[in-house]
Image 1 (cartoon, one colour):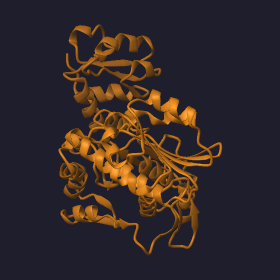
Image 2 (image 1 turned 60 degrees about the vertical axis):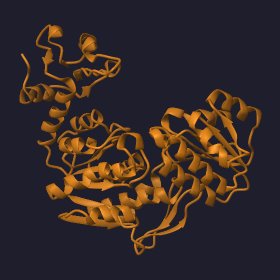
Image 3 (image 1 turned 180 degrees about the horizontal axis):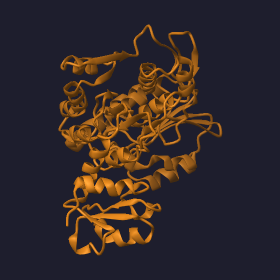
Image 4 (image 1 turned 30 degrees about the horizontal axis):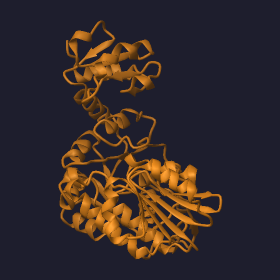
Length: 428
């Protein structure tokens, strides 16, 4: 017999966490069997129970051997409904966060600041999709005082779905840029898709935080009626002293703060965290300490000293907007020698040749000592870069770097996640 969501919630409350991966089963957890194009989690339900799961949620009635198997019509839908049910038991502020670039860094900064005063739960890693957001919500117990939920999307309607599950009371869009163009159908599609968070908050009387420096976000704010809005990064609040190799800023109290993140685009992320911290009562001095203490270790905007070379490691992801921001920031860096190692930008669909060609034109403006490109679509950037080194695969790239070592050089490394360009660090 198919279990109802209220009954399923009672079983969930008996469990110590939720897992969709039998490789990560913890004692007493609820295992949720999900299906994909290449796998069927139902087939691993027994394995999950043998490893210590208390219950296994499945949608294949033929496998329901005993009362430990909880049968539902569809595993993914049940996971989402269970998370929505749990969310409705929470009375804490939930901050929804989306955007084309900087979501995870901004989420980490916000959590660092808020944690100075409140018991805060934030999305772990990048569990930000139709599976990750439900898992995030189900990890929030009633001891937490505030939550920060990252929401990612690669097509329209996805943020609307995630909002219906997470029901944010507050929200922030970091920016709107050229990301996931293939799924969104162009930049206007991105704007509409990210704007679904603003739609939800306007409809439910939520509070939005808006970057006053962004013409696009100000326009999106003006298209909707909100109960409450807070603008940040106003010129009378902050002064950026330097952006390279890491941001140093002065706040409205006159305090000078040295961070571990480079570039104005990262200051946007810091300003969001400072604004939200102030809104929720975190003292300015403690908020600044949290920002200064944040040191990324996830291939996002990392500044790494490797021998005599200074590496700007930003290889977690890339799209035309984030790539342009990183390159323009690197152009400003004061260094005797500068090198860029750049990989393909993914999920651009039919726009990929044109976007990579435009990237080549931007790189040419930088007058870098050496330009190194990797990936099948980076060949389109070569038209504007006759002196660039091009490698269709990483193996040949690694060999070239080993044969041509750099010294006393600043090196920007950036590409989409699938390129895995962090692998070049060992050869530099």
